[in-house]
Image (cartoon, rainbow, N blue to C red; front, side, top):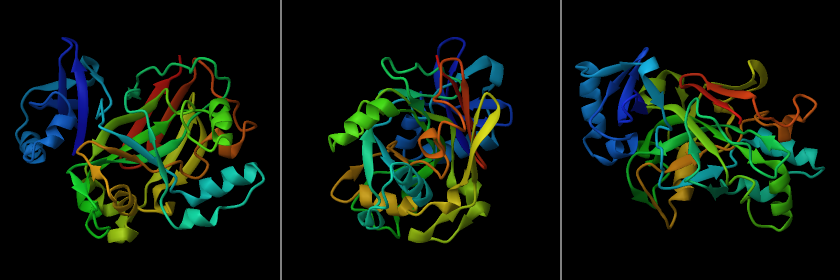
Length: 297
């Protein structure tokens, strides 16, 4: 299933299911409430088989699938990106990176959905994107064994970790952060795809679970980045197991993968494309999920 949160022209918000060009409304205000209901996914499946009220795409506005996630963790799980970004600064890999799947908490209040305008961060001159895939936690857990962690995933979505690199550069010198460099916007969408829809792309199981899914970024229709989810070093089960150590994961928590190789200007360089500007349209696409599009304003 493709689970969505949308708003109608009457300003009513629904969780729903995307089926082709139609959006089936469910009896929940957002996907978060649907996932919190132990019977929510089963009810959604029944609604898909016996659809009720449905809307055409021009009748609704897509929101972030989880408009107000309880928390957003962003990992650093693609080795190619980490190596390349550090090489740009003239430094090698940190050996400890291979020991734990490191993450930081980002702002869960500045969340944007598909086709929503993203404000340029005031005071910055170096706006960047980060092409990521994210998983959404579907049930609560703490100290989750890696062998069981995949069963906690409700689905996957596209994530853009917008980044003000000039802010971030100053913060990281102080050995704390990133903070304001990431504080202003994270985009998620256009929907959450449940794992069963991606089964044909899956290889491995448990800690070794991977998916063959091309990931690419375009600016104003021009491709500037291409990678693949299968190249991730740390799997989502490994990330979930680490994140849940001594801590409770809640339904609707977002875990971002970190940037796929070539997935940002910091890595590929501003000769490929200058720092992003107002008016540009960014599209992040992942095979099997869809396209997340935002205009910078």
